Length: 260
Image (cartoon, rainbow, N blue to C red; front, side, top):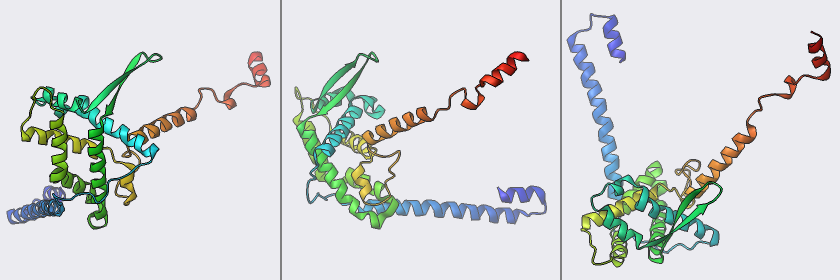
């Protein structure tokens, strides 16, 4: 853009100079994209498709309750709110398989005259998610080496992890009803959506590794909800009134106004 401005102001610039500027810009663009591709390739090569967690995590009662909420949210998204899942030609079959791994509890709120659906995950899917979270914590040990690229590394590693993928497919197949089956590609699609949705939850435990996982706005879902409610209540408490005390007329001021 700067070169174009100079060109408009000074018409003595030759065609050769214009070509030189063009090739310089082109070279810069090629170098930028080449470095990104090289960086992505390095991250993919770092992924270990056979990695297994050394230990399965254990959570206290409070954290376990929060984690169960996240697991239910993942299933809820897969069953009802993920547009990629909903638009798949075999979504009805996928919904049947996933629905067998959980139960739905509908609660009616009288005050708001609305209803909420809570998805309660079954024990098989809960065990899978504990294995998944244990593997994520294992993968985060490379945060010093990869820095801000750690999230992309974790996601790529999960998507290519053969043991984790096999556990997921085994769980889905065990819930098969009336011989309903899917192709391997379709099982892989559900697996990819499950991993992608879970990576958006940004668990609190992930932030222990460093400041690469932003806390506000990308915390776990329950923490997000608390933050949102807190910000809302704070805004309401700080909302200024229409009439300030200084603007209210005193007795003397009111008497003068009546005389006027």
